Image (cartoon, rainbow, N blue to C red):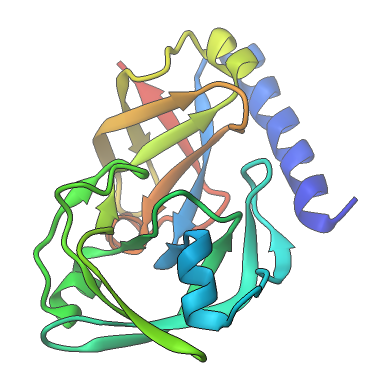
Length: 212
């Protein structure tokens, strides 16, 4: 068992004890840096025919992993290199960035839920074996809480509802309109982008509380 899996088990047990002892619904935070999910066709166009993504480490959500591969994304005003590819492959290519990245690229700021690529801007993507143009798929991911079915029952949450999360720390902040993504394939963790996390000085593993 790798270190990240062990950390997640310990973290889940700590959160469960906190809720049992205090009644407070506590969730760990994860800060999501810019990254890209690729379709099978685009993997081959960018990295070569028959290329398979190379996992380098598992991520906290079941079945998800960071890859060795990176790409460069280009907008009307600028580019960003070494954007990490995350696996596994998806039906549609999707790039998740921050508002700060949008300014650098010169693209509209569009907040969408992950997986909903229609209505988002496109960009140019360059890999070692080719360059592609996508008409849509570039987005700021809507803040969301991953939670398993069992955890959702314990936390009295339902898939698709929205909640508020409070962070204490030296720059206290309440995050509203946090979408709950509950079910198989999810594990307790709230995902924030770099801009959101930096605004409240939130680090990976910091705890946030669900508030009414």
